[in-house]
Structure formats: C-alpha cells, structure tokens
Length: 217
Ligand SMILES: [Ca+2]
Image (cartoon, rainbow, N blue to C red; front, side, top):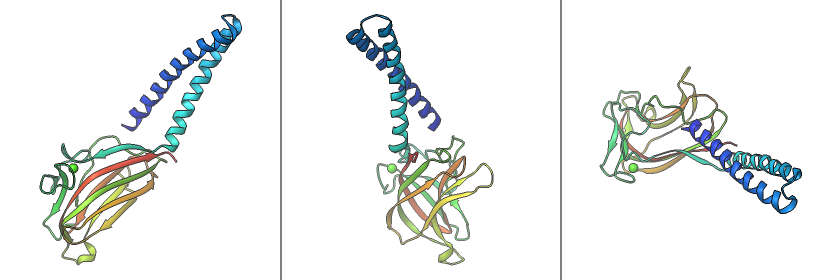
C-alpha cells in the first residue's frame, strides 16, 4: 500500500503540474509577450517551474504532514492478521463499532498467544517515523503458573525477514474491565517490520481502533 500510494501521489503531482504549467504558460505567453519566440520560451519555463513547484510541495507535504497508513477496527475480520488459535473477532461488548479483536488463552503455562501477520507487504518504510495507537479492554487478567510478573499482554514491533529483531513494544496487565489507550512512537530501523498483539499466560483482552501514522521526519 505504501509504495502504491507514493506512486499515485507522484503521478498525480505530475498530472496536476502539467495542467497548471500549460494554463500558466498560455496566460503568461499571451498577456505579457504575445505569441513570439519569447512567449514560447516563457511557456516552457512556466511548465518546468510548475513541475518543480508541485514536486516540491509534494515533498514538503510528505515530510511535515503525517499520513495514516493503516486503520483497523476489525469490523470485517482480522485485517492484516492470520486466523490463529485464541485469536478472533467478537461482538461481545466491543470497544467501538460492532466488533473488536479478541485474544484469549486458557493455558497458564503458554508463553505466547497472539496475532500473526499475514503475507502482505510491510506497512513500514526504513528510516521513516511512525506512531501506532490502539485501545484495549482487559477481559481476564493475564496470569501464569510461573507467577504474575511473568504474565502480561503485549504489543510488539519486530522485523521478520532475518532474525526477528525487536524494534519496540509495550507490556501491560491489569484487572478485568481495565480500559486504556496505547501509543508507541518509533523510527523504523529495519526492513519488513511487523506488529503483533498477544498475551503470555492465561487471560483475555479486546483490541480495537488500531491506527498507524507515518511521518518522514
Ligand atoms: Ca471495532
């Protein structure tokens, strides 16, 4: 989605630049110089200037204006995640809309139950800045047989191409009905980054309103 969107932006910028260039060239050529050689020169110069101006604006826009690259409310399924054991959507008391993502495990000895990313292209571009935000509601506290300090809910960003290198993440826990929002900021340090939600131990949680925002600098 990221590359396709960028490509569309470049093509659109070019088309708009060409239209503005032609119009500006005609106006300038007729108004100030007429239809002589200088008029043609101004006409071409205006097109070139307009092209530069629009690509410049597109570039500045991409640097300073944050862009939502992914938004998921789980209303039509799991979005970018695989169907997996303990992972699904639920209508029971959804956080927003009709459905929320639900992750649950009844095995206190299990290390990790959680979402798995599907084969889609990564949302994250190396060197760009991102924030990932989401809402959660704890249904059942995360507990393990090894003690409460070992069990938790988690959100993680990692790269999966080579060694599952860890980019960033958050762990938390709490009593049933605890609600909260999480927002994580990071600069993509690896290619092919993915994110995941899950829990260690026994427990259950709802996740909703996932949003990924990209900013170049
Ligand atoms: Ca929802």
